[in-house]
Image: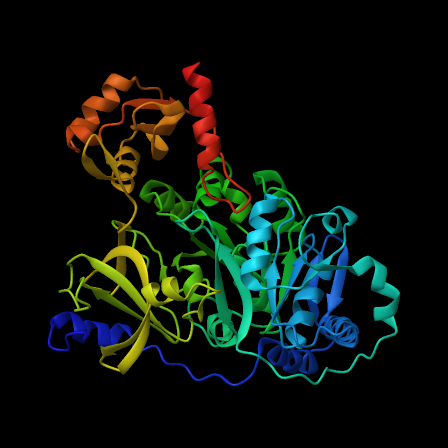
Length: 521
């Protein structure tokens, strides 16, 4: 397997992939935090509501909890789970687990029991840290420690750095699996350090105040927490609540947040309804789904003093892999170039570079590539391809399943998924293409398209719309027929007053289907 070195594309790739930045690749996240805490012990590391925690206090509390867990025999645990509300205590627990040399596993108690059990079994986790007796009552094959019950023990525990051997794995993030079982991505310490060390896609320093908005089981939390904490900044913890325009705006203002990652869907909602809440921000990073050009143009126009970047990255490549700082005029929406110590390749099915401007599958290399999937050797071997010959020699590449092309600028343009195709009436259809065409219409503010055999009926295309002004379905069909083949025209339209989002800020597909059933009654 060889990446063709003779094409023009590989010349451009060599320039794009010149991303090497020196950083300490031998230390762990906990060791990096310890160094930062010694440099700035009195600086504020965490803010949550009215609570402020300094770097020195966070280091001491994490050391004490780690030493208590060590005395209780958990030093050798490969992974330790936690089921905790977003608060300083949660960050203390994460850091303490890392100080033990273990990997942390975020566990959401609101998930179905079967899914939690699958995560526990796959990761072979023996211990869950919690703060709620309801969590302890869950039928999971693990030992629970309620942190509220050991508060006093921790306060009198040894506050020195525990001496342990650090493993390669830092945390496990579970994502949806095509088989119905979640798959656990094992992320290394070096991947996190690469994400936040001497990067150029965002400013991370002692003045940085990042909002921890995502649920901790969502990989954006990796950036939101360790981005500020490993650079002397402040992590502002958003309360345990679904973000709304009102509470998000209040939090940004009250805590002087200057850096924010926000999902595409939530970003679009704010820009459409109240973009001024973003005015205090120096930097907005946004991604997770394809962006609407109209929304982004509006954002750039009304927020001239805010740096806005389109961010892309799969969990398997430690949160972010590429970034593009956006400016007006904006005619395309690229996902950008690789961030520091990350390399990208656009390849065909024979692992050859495609020509610049041609479609191919995106493969990613570098320090951010994860270790693999916990307990899933065959899946790991299929998605993480070893010893691919590139201009840098034999590299390990992650196969993203995303279709992209490289623009003349070297930026990548996202085209869709290799496996995001559906088959309706014998035709293979890319749903993202229908969504893009709908959102290009002046009357459509936002769209989401599903292919579903609702209630056992024949699979059909259903378009869910937020409209700028009313339009009947006949006019929509007439407009789409000028852009799409007949088999890509939705059979039904559902007009919404708002686009339902899940707790990670992405479009809630189950809620959309529920709304469809309600309208069909």
